[in-house]
Length: 135
Image (tube, rainbow, N blue to C red; front, side, top):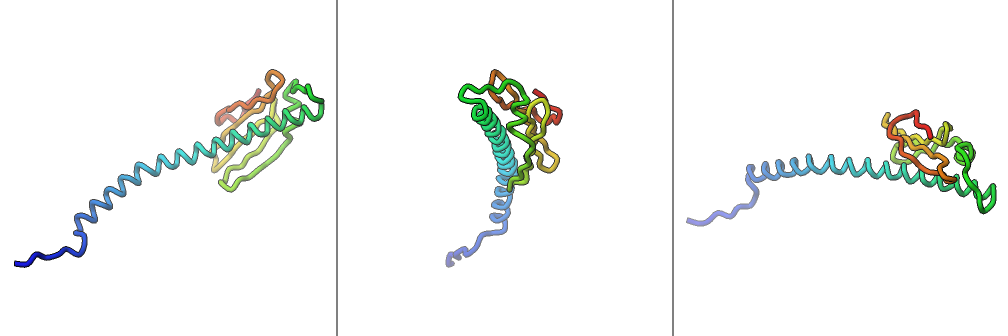
């Protein structure tokens, strides 16, 4: 009796591989989605910090080397109303309130940052999803 050589996988082996790949996909997709959301939050926070840095620089430029941001009106003047749209679908807009409020919106999800004058500097505060954030 001659030994027969196998030339292909059996149906059972293919089913096992498909099931294992499915389980891996179920674990990996939510983790990957979390990484994407965290990165967009980081982009939003960095944008808010950059605006605060620019507000400090503008105050220094307009008032000399020892400039101070004495109140939130200085920040409003420095930031002004702006709307930016990124490639990832987030819309960044600033709105004047008691400080400069930066709202990020994507498909109804909102993140709010507020830039306030604190101790003679512009400081960024994350306000969560509350659209009524104030300094």
